[in-house]
Length: 72
Image (cartoon, rainbow, N blue to C red):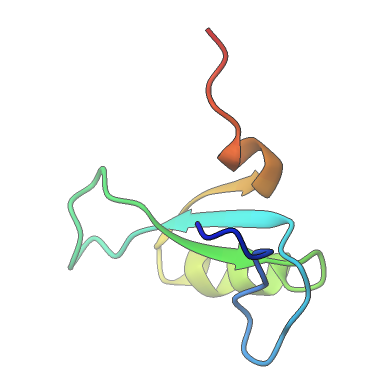
């Protein structure tokens, strides 16, 4: 990610992102590959449902947790 503040991936939304939605399309990606969409509080559920209905959604994680390194 860049130094800029991450923003929501919902069309037309310019609000700071709070969530990472990890997904993949099994017809296009290997099982371990993860693409990401970012979501604000308002759009998290909508974007999760959009990916979930298609069977693409793998995980929803707070942005702060996604960026932090794993603890030893």
